[in-house]
Figure 1 (spheres, rainbow, N blue to C red):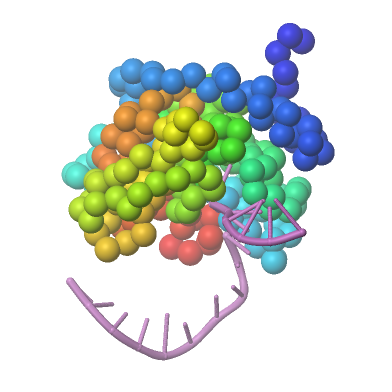
Figure 2: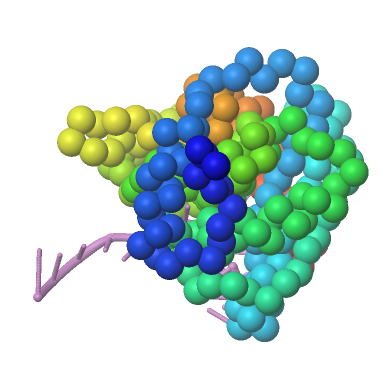
Length: 228
DNA sequence: GCGACAG
DNA sequence: ATCTTGTCGC
C-alpha cells in the first residue's frame, strides 16, 4: 500500500503522467550484471491496421557463438486487442501489458532485456524499457531508432562511435546516440533499469551483428512484424 | 500560440 | 507502427 502501483494500465493520460513521475526515481543504476546467460529482445508490432497488438520476445544465449552470431534459446509471441492509441510519452501503457504476456510464455528467465524504445531518455525519465524493467525488476536497456527528447551532436562515422544525449537546463545525460553501423542513422541507447549508460552501451555494442539493430532487438522486431 | 513527438 | 515496388549496392 505504501508503494504506488506499477501496473494500472487503465489510467487517464493525466494520471499516467503522475505515475511515471513517481516511478522514475526508482530506476536504480549500475548493477554488476555478472553471469549473464540469457539476453532477451522485446518488440511490439501491429496487425489489422493497429487493431491487434503483437508482442514478441526472443531469448539469445550469451556469450555469442562467434562475434555477432547468437544462438536463439527461445521465442514467444502474444497477440491481443490493442488497448490504446499511440501517444508520445505514454508508450508503455500501450505496449507493456502485451510485452508482459509474451514474457510470461517463456520457460527461461532472461538476465537482461533490450527493449525497442527509450529507457530513461524520456520526458519524465520513464520510457517503455524503464517501465518494463521496473515492473519485472529486470535489468533493461532502451534501444530506439529515433529520438523522443534531448539534444545531441552527430556521432562519429565509425561503428561504436557515440555522443551523449542530454536534456534539461543542466544538460543531464540521459542516453547516447550510437553509430551501430557505418553510413546508417544512429541508434538512441539509454539505461532502462538497474544499469548505467556505460554498461548499457557496452552490451549493445557487444550484441551488434552486421545490421543497425543489435541482435536481440533485430530478431524480436522481425518476429513482431511477422517477417523472417 | 507554435513546434516536437519512442512505436 | 503500418501501408508498399522498385532499386541501388555489397
